[in-house]
Image (cartoon, rainbow over all chains, first blue to last red; front, side, top):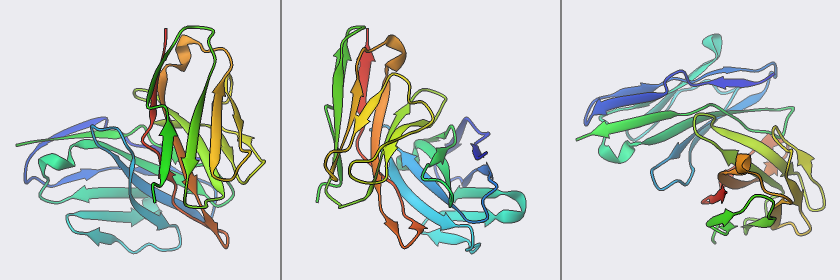
Length: 114
Length: 115
């Protein structure tokens, strides 16, 4: 069975703080894909990143960085120097190589206060 | 290039009424999906399609039907709406390139309220 756990339901920070959103996954597939999506208050789902299981390099994109650790089955997302515009619900998702389905976590609501 | 579009954006139904949600994509993607999003539950897959003329059940298919008559369109039908189907519905599409799973891109969502 595949499962994604985002244990943090809601996080509140003050602008310019760093914040890490946790994602833990379960899968029996040897090849799999991990994703992060952002859902701002307007409601649409915005793709942020995709990581293949055979590529454990961490990635940085501006203020965003992702830490993929197969040993702990985690794919955590860090926002450095958070801004009010980062306020959104963030979803981690998993897709195994033997399935056509994308399994979502329950999401973490991030509120960044000025 | 509009990406993934959904029609309508918002709808109110009475219990027992029927309706069809339309999803269209202009990216020539093979795969299309319908999800529902409920508070505290993330997104759950209703049905999906791996190509024109094919459909398959997802995690929560009961009460819904789908059709993929054209590659660019994926229809989600509610034959007899129930209050439990009040939700936000998202459509997504994806390409599968030489076995490497590609990213799913989502439409803007349809808010459905069943009274």
